[in-house]
Image 1 (cartoon, rainbow, N blue to C red):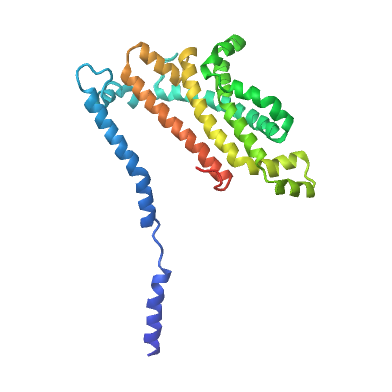
Image 2: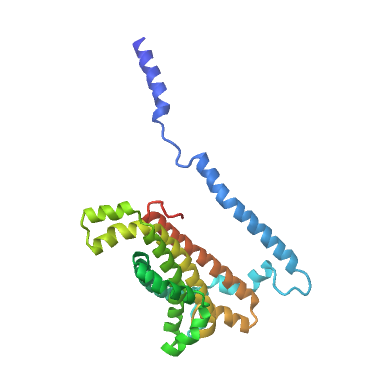
Length: 286
């Protein structure tokens, strides 16, 4: 009788100790809801594109012809024949290097200026009108001025990235600094934090969600600006590749390059959003 009771208890306790599945049904459902709708929309878009562009006199090639005509650059992105005759990987890599440098400079300067504007009423009154005027200037309008100043395409492109992406960083950082709760400032005063400690331990953590919002906007503008600038300055870069393909009437190669540009822009946004989500512990929306 005692043995039967013990076995019954073990049998009853066994399901509780069983391992839970690594992937739950709810997780699979959530993943499907995120992936399936975009795939359906993409399939419908490609189908409509194929049907509309198969007609005689269509200005653009259908997707099937794009893949056929541009298969060489799709299948061989790493070739390098010297000069500007390179695969898409090298053009994209050159553009990303320019974006990384220009955007990094914009982040450093933007956070510093945004902190100054957000913390000082006088700085806000003096600098904000100037910022509002300068940020409305189109990115490419800065290119002739930067070429005249630097007399070289590389620093000119980096400057265009910098001047394009800095404004949302400044504005969002300033808003985040101004929205720091007064209680945080009072605690910092009680603890007698110096200026650097207040900046590192109070300002940056409190304003981080706003800062990362500005960074997401800024990195998108950086990628947009470099593609446009490279069409004019030439050299190796995805913008130059698109312009060169246009001059050679390779429309299919342009479409493939635009797909790469869009995907990389999306990845850059996701990377900054994911970093913001990690740094702010979920406060910044990813």
